[in-house]
Length: 249
Image 1 (tube, rainbow, N blue to C red):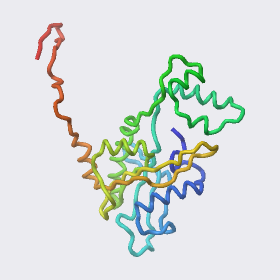
Image 2 (image 1 turned 90 degrees about the vertical axis):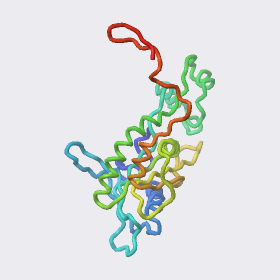
Image 3 (image 1 turned 120 degrees about the vertical axis):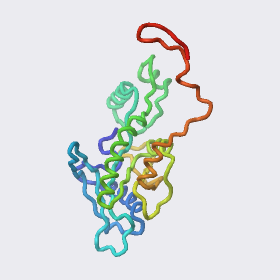
Image 4 (image 1 turned 90 degrees about the horizontal axis):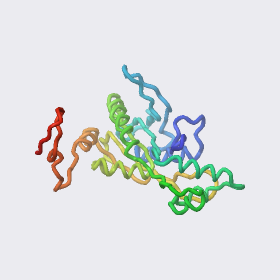
């Protein structure tokens, strides 16, 4: 939900913490290449006619590097998290926080249980907020397919950086990928936060998980849905025709 996400593409200035997080990503994408030899551009627009893509980051290993890793150029997409359910409950909780004499992270970091919300916010009928990773994953699929093809058109690769929760969901959805290999074309990268109750920004520590694959393997994983055994036949049952008659299959 945070507008700055993990490594902000639109911020006027990248902080040292952002640069450190970006460096941890590039170390995984370009192993053995010094940080001083990796350049980046932000918010690059590409017209597809029809449509337009905004590339969060475009990474390039400097030409002076004699033996760069393969590939040496990457389109990098940053997606920290996604939507939450029951946003009204979250709003009431944050409003309560803002009215405290000394608002701090310890209040916001508490687990929002039903009992807590009823006791502290006076809400009798309450639904605890949750996450909806499926929605953001569906939006990211279009980004991955288009931007990965764009990167391959120019002898590059594509990488998606997400937070741990979304990364874990994607790994369950895409049973593909493995350790780094020179011919990789799509990378899925998860980053971890340091849980803290102190005031201030929540620091991002490091890359916690990486998966590398070819674009063909990524597409194949999307198509190869494995259905569990013993599923009931959805076509069996009672039907009503458009002329209001019934039959059973």
